[in-house]
Image 1 (tube, each protein chain N blue to C red):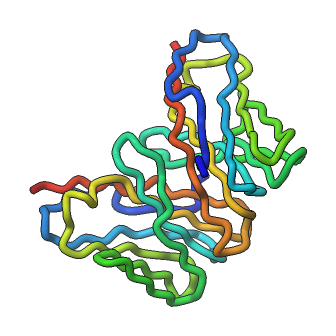
Image 2 (image 1 turned 120 degrees about the horizontal axis):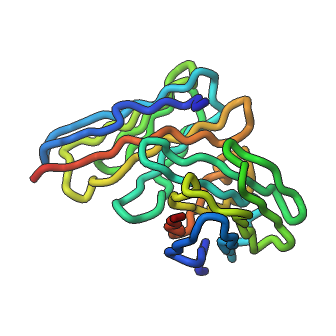
Length: 116
Length: 110
């Protein structure tokens, strides 16, 4: 199993550009989520999905869109990039949500995004 | 706002010393998870605690869940350079989502 994969690893955008961060998992996990990590802020939830066709907002959803057409893929779209979106983005998946011990999170390697 | 608080934010430790990092929630948690992130890496799951007063050990790491299920601690004995990184707690509470603390960044001095 490859686990959770993310592409690209690094990206530089100009303000106003749009792009999609890709995330895929091959563990047949129901639950997938996107986090951003900023210094001193920990990991903040952007959007999450409890299964194909179902998504919901997290703590910091503004400026981001998601969709979940398959169990495996959960792309994150930046609609119009802003410097405040400069961050490290992690995708994570778990077997399910809220039922231990199967709700532990498996993180991808991250995408380091800079918006100029 | 953040509902899971983690202290300290930074911890400088001499190799061989012990240290503890704490995680506190304003509400009762159903479970708490701990993750470690090496510099430049991604968070990796360490352990999950579910029961009130639960204590689990992984070699030199001891994890505790408070009796009221509102706090947790991670204690590392005889710190080694391999312990360098940021340790996150993540609590799942009545709000349903997994809430991460801001993390404790650990620096080890040889």
